[in-house]
Length: 583
Image: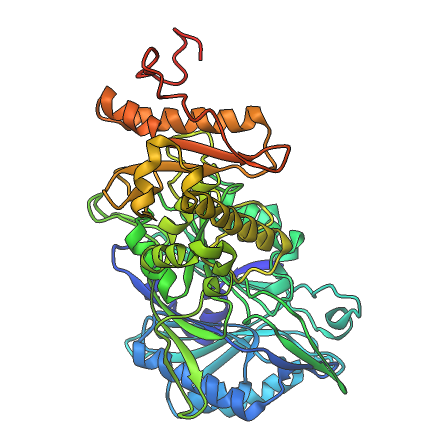
């Protein structure tokens, strides 16, 4: 794998470097248009292509029309997806990217020898460039087509449309050695930008990631946007993920990665056999700017449009996953780095999803999809009678629902900022990238499924306790007149409010915690309440309205030390962990 500056391909053709808007390191935002197509493909020794060529042609032609209509600065399709016939047709009629825009299109496979005829056919319309290889009629190439306008190297003539083709360098591993036997490999990864006045962009084609090692990461990580286009049944497989660790381990915050896969549940035909991969999509945007916009209102809008927030613990990075369903996504994003921009303007807030569109066969067009399903409505019934309350919260702010659910289960960590998105346990993802978000429920991994069900059922059992008058201690007698779940930043450690407007902290620890664990959670919650109280009286009242239930060894619902803060001779107005006294 050689990282080759694009200028090395353009100069012999008499062309200069394009000035791509996405790579200008100023404060201007840029637009990104992504396609996550439905997968119905044929794979054979002849290559990989759509089963229904007519449908694919209409969908991808419509997508490129969207790229022109929106004047997107960066347009991307995943591996093996763009039909060559569609791209050639569009270029011939002059529907090309505008000056400063870049199309990065993963195309259907093609025999290397067929590119020469295509190059000649396109010559009046575009300059086609690609790495010289020895033609092998028994193998196909896996191509990424960059389309852009390049200026002449000398003079002021109008720019020329360029079609620069990059080939996959490393085959995918599979039991049948499909690409090992059938793929003709390239050797070059092209790099756009990288001059003193521009950022950089490079692309990996699926299993290219396996050969993207330390040397490559060190060469390109700084101020670089990395595109990783895939047709991948296991996009978070351990070896595929390692390139992200290599890129993100360096200091600084100016590396971003856009992973773009096909939609979930790809159907692959091979001969007379068709099988469903039962795959997730895993398309995501990875970044870690110091001024990332993690406000609830910003991320809630993203969520409602189909872009879901997580925090990758091992790389200390923000990861926003796209809805797994087939769709196109139009985003506005801040540049991967700012150079020479005043501090007051340099706010790299991350990507904002502005439009999600789905294919409408009736009109043969991409149409707005106002509320992509996040899957929560299919699992919220696990809350039992609490489901309507939790759904109400999630509809307004999905993070509030997850905070209430965490507090109901006593999952409040070891910091009084447990509710911030970097600490909220359901927002965190480990190196495996299994998504435990409760209000985004498309991850089919058993760990994600078990986490969601357990958290929801815990809330449902707590609701039953609160609705049983005999279970309520005197301090919570007002809940008999009615209550609702609520989370607010001004009272972050309380999850219930009565009809009279009094707040409480209620927790159900279930049957999987011992007495010391239950006591630890109770003391921790009490300490958090104490720290956020404005005066001793408020501290005492808040802790008197803290109650922790559990199921004891006999199987009965029990209240843990319910009178702990009601003793008049020990009002406990000090910290729970005050070393000057014993607890």
